[in-house]
Image (cartoon, rainbow, N blue to C red; front, top):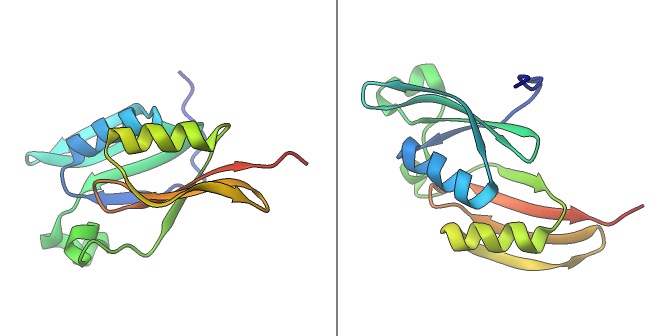
Length: 135
């Protein structure tokens, strides 16, 4: 397997890293590329989703001053970013994520740019699932 080029990739802080990996596999057909456990938690993992890279680790609030982030539950289940996932069939990808346990924030609808829906994963991160119009 050729390691994908790592340019810019989201790095998520979660609570329950092992469960998050299971969710991303079920919801988004994620492929686990690497995983390192640390002190009974997920220290780091790299996943490939639809050709892109997503990195994640369990939060370590005791060293937030070194990591610079915490998981959404620590912030009252808020996040400051949306992960945009461009796919071939927004409806199918969205439905699969909901079946895996994602919360619907905005159902998939037709937009001027294509089909788009928004959901929150069980770990507090927000995703836009998009299929762009041709041309």
